[in-house]
Image 1: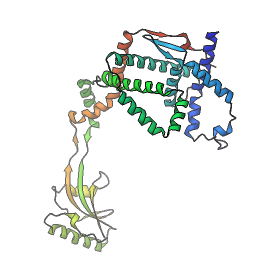
Image 2 (image 1 turned 180 degrees about the vertical axis):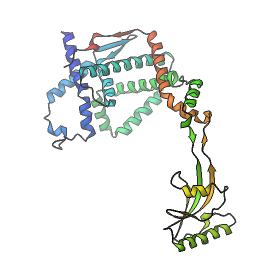
Image 3 (image 1 turned 90 degrees about the vertical axis):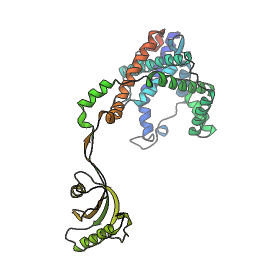
Image 4 (image 1 turned 60 degrees about the vertical axis):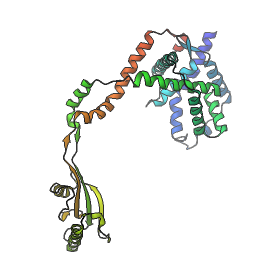
Length: 352
């Protein structure tokens, strides 16, 4: 009788997971019906009896043990919460029995690893200070809002404040142990970095840089008055000891700007700039958009980045896969010395 009841509870919870993607879809569109524009909660009749049974099933699921890790129990309730978390990140909701089984296996694997990691943290004395727990809870309450909203949050999550406190303590301990055993111990062999650098050397090029101060007179080619005003402005720049275009008095006929010359778009200006030394003032340059006078601020030609210059970018590319590799290694180490029991209840009934 007990086994039949457990299977019914699992079926109810599993169907909740199955419908998770649909619920999230409604939430992301403001819970509007595509046909009527009415909210889903308004368009569907309330079934309080079903909701009560669902709550009862979820509470009962806390008593169902799906696995034991060195004697520590993992409940059906915890498993379903992890399944929902994973389901929320999937591009397509898990609706078939095969999909749900895949999500369930991934969720159980994660929970087993988390339990092993938590036990390792405790064995190393990585206990979370009460001050850190208090700060995290205070931050959570602040983000939620007022006290009433906080109570509603606890009711929705079906946890007591003490249970929430224990979850926060556990989460912070896991952060510390993963930082110590995974992130700090992730390494990428230098020969692997160099091999990729040599293979993809063409991707690590520092482009040519041409930085100028640009005095720009907007207008069409053939406007003699435009050229005359530009010549007068250039003469004033050359008369100034510092030859600073920013000291020109703006009269509405031109602008002064710091301007990075773009390859393929500022061809006339780029050709002129390459003839100048740093700080030198150009001649009058005619371009499709008007007339320019430029002062060269900085010029650096295109060049190949060295391995040391490209190292950071290479490491960033490979870090995620390296961390995943280290995580799998650590998981294997933890499981090798652990006693893990998967209970029959975790398998559940075949789903419709």
